[in-house]
Image (cartoon, rainbow, N blue to C red; front, side, top):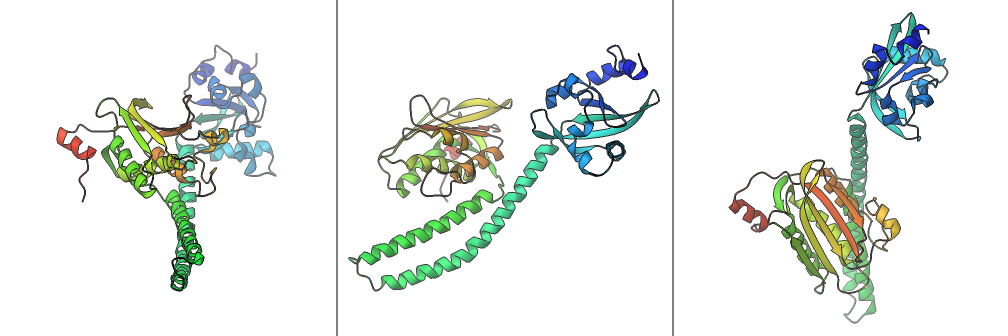
Length: 377
């Protein structure tokens, strides 16, 4: 048995240390050929030890070979190991072809007169943080673009509305052109609302949390929509257990928006009356106490495709609107550390469920009453 074989034998102390490491560990020779991989390599990246042994390390780490496409692989690997001793986020190619970002440290070592490369892979939040940063930058760019478009468009649309005002002075109430003018006015208003919805979707979410009863908040949004849509036949029923089952520390204004988007979708049904049932109870999310709210309507169920894509930006099955309503709701719920999903219950209709952490401090009875029935300014 040669020196390297002894190094990676089952009885070797070096191997045992690498096997119990909480990180994924790979050892390669000076040319970058993988000689050893511990069990975490399979758990994290999907490669069995027999599959990855003998393959190239830069197959796992594509950014290394991309640094100098014309360099000899051994030279590139050696230079990478020297330059990455402090570690840093790197893309790793998994067996299924997907890529994840982990912290990678490459260390050149000398063992039994052999030049080796020790690659240590450790999970961190860097991939998540990078994704969140990129998403934030993208939303910020969209918000700036839409704000600029809305500003310029608003000026043009206001001029168009002013022209309609002048035209309508020449129309009598019975003139069919008056109704056409009013339809144009409503269309211009819809266009501005679409700009505003895109701007709100892209705007950064800043939370101002207060302990809030979600059930009465949902009821108040329903009442507003009922008046706005002249939908007096619609009904809502709110079901819950204990008085504080719906209590969570959330941004009240933001959750008004969540309820508005969900209920507005429920109101938009081809038939007349819509019955809405809201259930709330206690649950957990990521080992934290949480509130679950289910909002069911007896209208049309989600299409099969919509069940998967309901929360995608700009996805809609309607002839009007931007398709951003539920996307806005999802961003708000996730900003609170929660989750939201759509489903079609066996009983029929459609249902949206969200879960948010409670994070509620101890409150006295007067404070609870004030939250349930906020005093108007």
